[in-house]
Length: 98
Image (cartoon, rainbow, N blue to C red):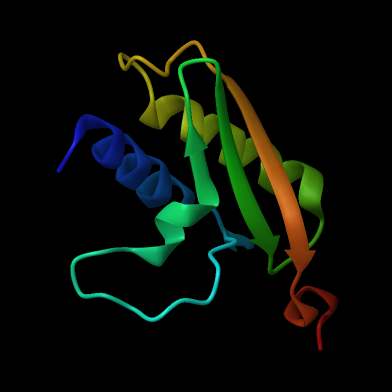
């Protein structure tokens, strides 16, 4: 696994601890050795962008927790000083109690 892939996995693991958000991974055919959720993360030394789907509301406290989780996952890495952008691409119907 490359260093970049390790950091993406660290971000996904950190986000898995935040209730109400999940990576906005495209629907692709699963491959045993590859996590499609990794496609929700763009990682450069300048900007870390994570596309998310909200599964619960309200968003602001969940996004704060997610931003903190991503920042902690990147401490000590080449991406530690990057701007973190969390982009909510969709709101799941379950967020509205449906």
